[in-house]
Amino acid sequence: MIYTIEIPLDMQKEFSKIASENGKSENEFILELIREQIEDYEDAIALDKAIEESTGDFVSLDDVIRELGLENELL
Image 1 (cartoon, rainbow, N blue to C red):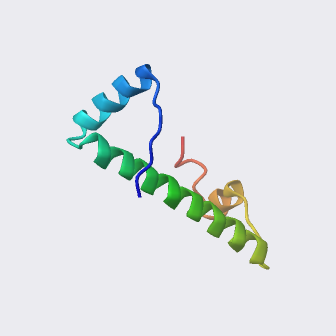
Image 2 (tube, rainbow, N blue to C red):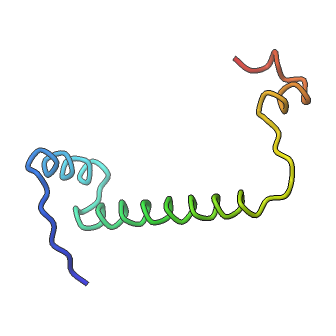
């Protein structure tokens, strides 16, 4: 499938520069960006579902740190 999009000139320059710096073609770079966005979206949906289905108790990070005695270990 082929899509056509208009990319503003300032974004084109930055996009080309970043792709080149990462040793990728512009096509490879944009496919990677799309893949990452899809993965992030799917992760967010899975997290929302897990939270909705959760019946357990949640513990705050502060409580975990106290429980493990790490108060003085973290900055």
